[in-house]
Image: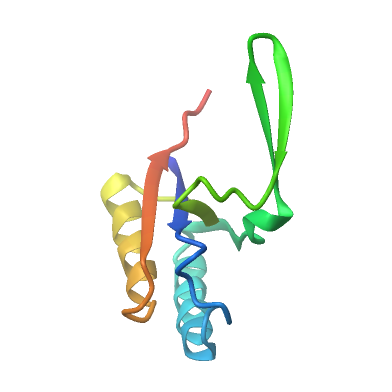
Length: 118
């Protein structure tokens, strides 16, 4: 069965400063339990803010580094999941359900991409 990487993109400047509410964490926990029991979820995690990150860039044969926060970027990757689904439609459906656990004031974009095997 194919594996899929889902990248969760958020706007750090407009995300709630307190992070996910306890109710959201509970809803996500229940969904993650369901996905895991279904044998779909392989791994998932949220990421620390970009202020904790470093970008490593290769150009013209040289490496450069930029420490966060990355103020020029509107959306950043706030988390990811790796799932094993029968097809892309199933991966998108699980992603839709994940997004719907969030309160209306969140703005989130999820990118679902199949992992190239072999």
